[in-house]
Length: 610
Image (cartoon, rainbow, N blue to C red; front, side):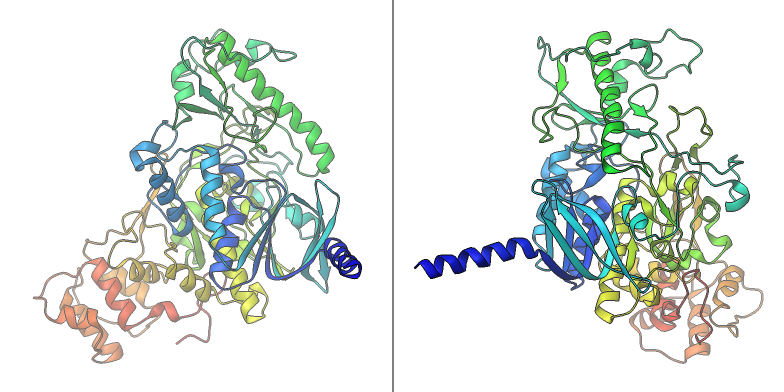
């Protein structure tokens, strides 16, 4: 018995000290991008590990408390659409989460964490480890091979070896440790080609926010917190019309109640993430150590606590108090701050505002792997050094190219979250929750394919990643008028990604759009021009303004001969009329399959295509 106990003790001792893991895909950071990446990687068959320093999954939309989704309401791509359905199911339908005016989808942060943990827990190839902080990244011969972590509570070390590592940290900490080139701050327009008035390169990042959630404890309750040190209500003058005395400040257009209803959540809760003389704060902590960051972030917490006191004491909402059933923190504040921006990798492709605003002026859209539709929204009100005009600059809905996830030179590393290769200006829209979620999903798919095939991520064909994403319900093209339930959704997505039958990009308020117009007719000249990139000999009878069914079938016969594809056969039975864009997309997809023609990370057709 004694020998047995000693053996057990020795085994336990060495197992606790060894702490060495070996996986296909390592995801560093359990934010919304990292969680989506880990789930998708596991679903694609890769042995996957997510390591998260905190106790929650979901990052900005759960642990940081920003549980009001910005954008992608009409683009329910992939895991984002799946997550939203689970939110709807939890609360009883879409109308139950349209509680505040900033968003169509609002929920309690702890519910998001619970749903994401449930989703992750169902994946047999996925393991999540909490409570470990990143200490170093292993790089050998120009390739990231894993990382080392320290358990926050005990100091115990753990090393992980991986075929592919995903940087899903909030500030791009893996990039820095791996010495991958990156940018912090704004680039001059002369470098990016962006024409938004940024004339000089600087190190300015967006304001961050330490979110608090208030709860209505009922009439007659006084939940007022202790007056914070240094409190002065003038700090929040102009946040609403009920407290507006300093007329040198911009006049507010909401009263106190509407200011609170901005982020109203289900179950009588309120998210405090108010940018207009509210609780945003400018702190550039990107290059600081964890200890230095903690000191600075206390300033952000205090800003929010002063705002809470202002709401309670000066605006009279004493019955609203810090919620006691959300965050597992002593101060009832969010588990982490809401970082809008950190390091941005220099990738194979750098995505910028000009490419977003004029998507079909170049070929980059062909390499798209995630979609977004929110305006370019920068928070700089607390830093007067920053250009103040970058607020809701109009752009259409857009797609992010695969090359923005891959470092220019370093192998073994893929980037998700806000560290993808975009300009500072473009970050104002690519940083938002659903975009980060679907971009993370693409990162997980890319990592799983690279690990499975034993090749660097940069060598994985763009079309292979796109095909795999489309198979799991993700969008490649940001067409808001063709939902996944549409019978020709996949064909329209594939043909759209070839550049044949281009969409119409339209900036539109808070929810920008790109229209495909599936039921519209097809202009012959534009169709033949775009088809000629794949089939230079494509012709139709002269003088045709709109493509008719007979014209389309004749073109297919000319290029490929008679084809017994369902779409081809079905159209043969239709009387002669103009063909719709959806019908033509399906016919082209079925019979010509232009999507099989390979493209590079810039979206250009590769020379070995037909």
